[in-house]
Length: 168
Image (cartoon, rainbow, N blue to C red; front, side, top):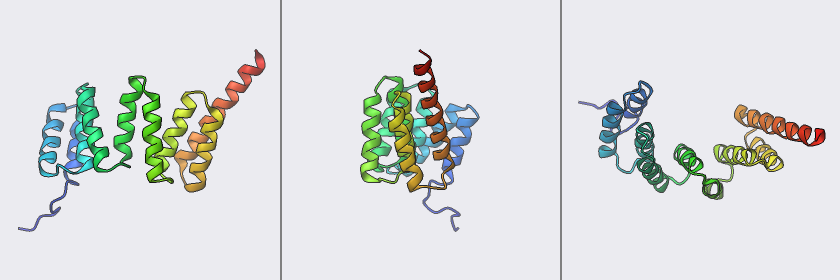
């Protein structure tokens, strides 16, 4: 017999995601574990397992899965962003910044990393840095709608801050 998707986890990924979306963590866990057994060095399989652990509210196991995904593929933004969410919940913005800057050292044009850093700057009140970073992202990816939306958000936030300072 000919396999439709030979030795690939592509067909299993939507299954795990479907079970997660349906709120069935047990079935998602079973599918993700089966995928990991077949593809232990697949970064996306570890991201999916991390997502299962997130749904189960086990931050330590989720962190381990996302970290393993980043060991396999250091620029995997799904893993980096999920790990960043855990770190931000734990008050570790400096760790998030270092991770994202490390990704940019490997891939200077990584749109997702640039925008994530811009959002981090924005949340810290560093509007000028955020706007400059988004403009860099736009120069590298001029057709990115997401970059334009983040730029608008950063400019609006900077304008609000300026208005508050002027009215005080």
